[in-house]
Image (cartoon, rainbow, N blue to C red; front, side):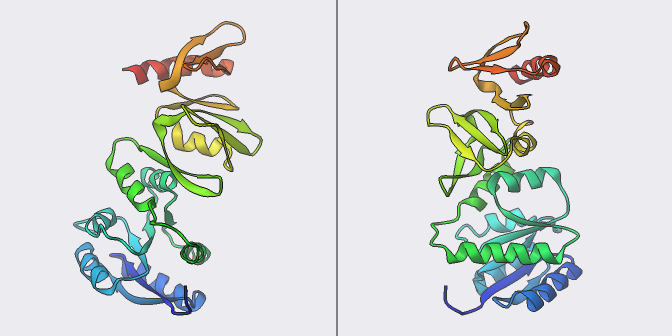
Length: 254
């Protein structure tokens, strides 16, 4: 990237939010020039196509159309997106599945600056087309997310959830086991994966193990309770989790 400032557009129906972001960027982010602030989805679609910005700060919940619908109306996206949203657990999980950049309202100066610096660093790297927004939109539209973004071998990869058999804790990191590919070590602890996956067909049966219920073959409730996976692997089950798992499995089968 040369020394030319990056063009930014702010899209938010709340003028105070626009003013705050613009003031912080003017004060703390000399690499960015805010071209305009827009207050409706319709206006955003028109102006983004005209201005061709490098970065768009995009509110999700706006009258008449959402920020997601703005993105769907601009399929040839050459800009980076930093989402702005009030707290919504479903939306936040969708962002985490796709590793999309987002800011929570009420907005915080340090978080705005950190998000901008993250985008700049990403733009300075020799990257291919950013798939994260496409993955996010597909996950938002479906009843259950289909893919999760994972950093594997120093690359971000988008993995189909139905290819993950189980996860195993390794101190602060987690091993992910796949149906066909070799296991991979990921720099997230297993608790983070529990928050993401355990209402998506996965279940934490032990402090060290999360399983994809699709790959469970049987359960033994005797002393030393364990699951047997389709590949023959035996996974320990915490005694206090047995009945919850059986009930969850019954619901999953239904």
